[in-house]
Amino acid sequence: MTQVDHIANMPSLHNTAKLSTVSAAEVPDILAEALKRHGPMVVTVRYKNRWVVFAVRVVGIRAGTLWMTLPGAVGSIAPEEMLRRQTIGMSFRLENFRYFFCARVAQFQPYTARGGLKATAAGVRCPKEMQRLSRRIHPRVDVPGDLQARVTIWPGGRRTRFDENVPDRPVWSGQLTNLSTGGFQARTEGSTLAFFEPGDLVGARLAFEPGQRPIDMDAQFRYGSTDGSMSLLGFQFIGLDERDDGEEILEELRRRVELYLQG
Image (cartoon, rainbow, N blue to C red; front, side, top):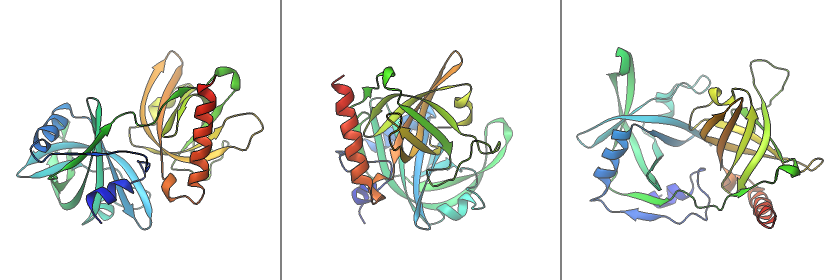
């Protein structure tokens, strides 16, 4: 599988994405700038027939190796087990673009994090090329407030069974404020934002109209802000390409976007 094939099959992208190739001469400067800004990178890895998505930060680039923080355990699975000798997809935002590349995890090494904490970093070889696309590849439209479009969000992906009566498995409900075929934005009450980090996987149930059958989606938390007692959260859909009903859902999202555009 080539790098472009791997990226095209990552759950964070739809087949409609048009990628351009970053030249080898540009790659070192782009990675250096990403390290300087200390922004999050999103790692996507295929582990035991399912996608695992999490956020990391680059802590250094030395001798052609990019070193990144390790995520926490996924259930009982240690991050080293998920990543060891795996080819992973990595993406990050910089200026008006998102960058994507594939790399193989080569080694792990202890390092001293900020505050003197001891931690472990994973090392991947710096890529010789990357793919680049504009940050907004799906037209976004505001959802009219009088339509009462609602969204319910819970941690762990759509297959995670949720129960609003279980205190240690939180569920949030809010208003769907805008929508595209690539993701959505929601407004919720309270401190919802405090529970999420960029790259977190969630399940999302979208109900566009009262009484209509909702759509359950896998989504990735991308950004958030607060406005008084409200949280504004942005999510990106993932995994549609792997679902049997993916095309049907994508068509429904397109229909909704066109409907909202018409007012």
